[in-house]
Image 1: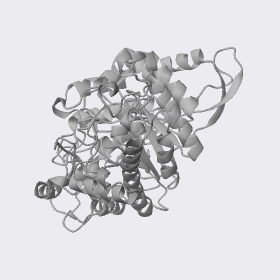
Image 2: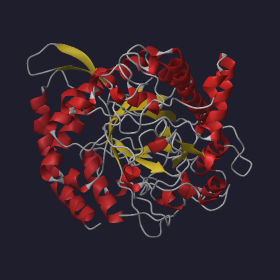
Image 3: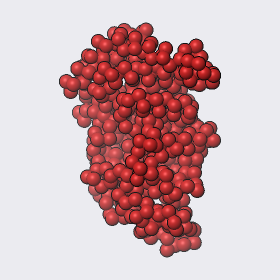
Image 4: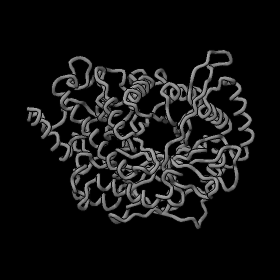
Length: 540
């Protein structure tokens, strides 16, 4: 969920969400993560990966919320994200002028803001952090709303306890208990690799249309979850809640769980592995192969694609010269594998847009920034994740075009990274990847938002985000993450200047040095709030 905080000049006790012990509380399960963004202060709330347990996670919604300073608690509403203000600016104190846009900044909340008992964690710390963030000009916050908490015990019964109180944080939570029970009965509901290893982070998209969950299909379950959310928070949609980011897969991203870090299965920069060996995926592959006229191709996925931690050249399928990925079989398989992912996204978006139609909210989808091995011909790591992107094929344009049909925003990661910072042997090209995705969204007429993949506080990374956001014409940016280190003196100084630059853009009348001087003033003004926030976070 994203909440909007009032601007610096409007700080007041009533303008910060108050999380008292007698606040209402609701339960939230984890089929759909919800991120809420606030419009005037910009701390985006999201659950850290480490906090999410590996027990089956279904898709999650992300919601952007605006904050009403007249209320003592955050209101959840989905509306159009703030329209960036067009400005003229110069790159230095004496340069030519060009046209640019300010980009609102949001901050991700900690993953454990809502407890398994549906209570709100760290009330004191959150109040202090909100005060400090809004004073810095942060646009809002983002948080996850988990299906595993909301529909936890019984199918069809929704408890919104902690989210009604906080609307902004949750731990990485397992799938609802009743869903886990169904998976225990039928293990093929989970993604499976060629060695029979099951991944319980998300239900296999192969069973999207199978009534395998007590008579409902997974898509119907996701839709019912979103519908229950709409019913519970209908009074906030289009007012406080401005955006819903609909979860499509592991970590909320539209992809296969091809690089699972749990138990050391995958380590960077391994190529990952295809996830198409449950019976439902294999059944679809079999039908596709028969329709193609090659039934022998429908019994299994590639058998020469290596293992999770191989490099492309260590495999026959992904190697540069004469690799199977570029042959007839490879093109057939990769087309089927990636199309299954696109179809999955389209099914969920069809439900989401229908449920939230005319509610004043924007729908967004997160796409993973898989930048390792991007510099090779096969782009192996992207292929195993379901992105059919190679030296000879643009795999992000089909995704962007699919999103355009629903007027959805494409949210992309790794915006803070530069090519030369990455290990040479990993063939990483994050800057080229971000540029390719930005061009795809432009061609498909889709808005793009960004976020950093890793916590960074240095000027070098923040400057890269500024440049990438400007070049890609991003509609919003979410900063990862709200934690104690952010409020350390030097980090806070850099962050305040960064937010101001992002939000205002470069004005024709002022150079960056002037913006930084003004930011320094805000740092001094907010020092008591920052110290309080840092101390409060240490206590937890």
